[in-house]
Length: 100
Image 1 (cartoon, rainbow, N blue to C red):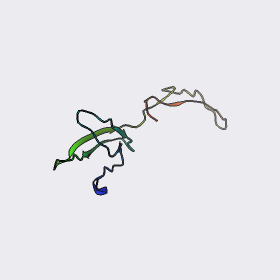
Image 2: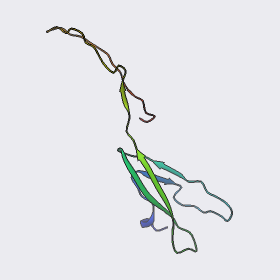
Image 3: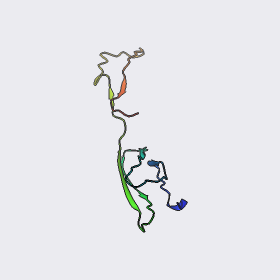
């Protein structure tokens, strides 16, 4: 395979990058999606096939989503706060989405 035709993308990776599929068999590929920002991503990978002039396209699409944060308490009532007094309060900010 010509190195210029190898699949290169910042958000998608394909493994393995080369191999052979014998008649009446199949090969498993792993496509990894690693978005950097909230955005709709698309890419096209191609399979080169011996004996064919055109390559077989593999269309890739993914939606990058950021974390969804939520405070442990939606509202914090501090009551009366007097000048020159120190008060400490603890609230928790939690990521409620399944991503880091």
